[in-house]
Length: 175
Image (cartoon, rainbow, N blue to C red):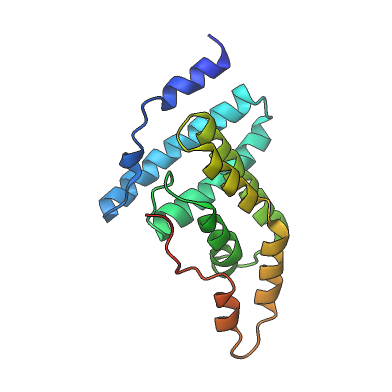
């Protein structure tokens, strides 16, 4: 059996609606499902894409942080129903205000993991290619997010509201 056939059946028939969050119990259940999904991503990256375990692990760590901390725990979104705007909200706002020392290198690693994860989901037929392409493009906009980090550190009296308005977090994602 080739490596691709080992990965694909693991996700074939996955019920994307099982990732819907409507309660705390759902959040806990979806968090566990997400851990399993990240394990499949790791397997795919190492076996199918041939990445070294350390690189695959770093990508999975980035995807895991985005999905479990932001999409699931903070936004209560179904990870299969997000769009590129959620990535922009994460990288241009949430990450910056929720991280002790937001920085380019760490954010670049997280964004690379998000892109790898959504490429994987697209290859598995779990999201459409156009959504994947938009999410990857949002992940590639690192310079914009670094400018947001620098602007955050430059905020002085009364400047937070203007900074926040540049990339509002409270805009809803897709339904």
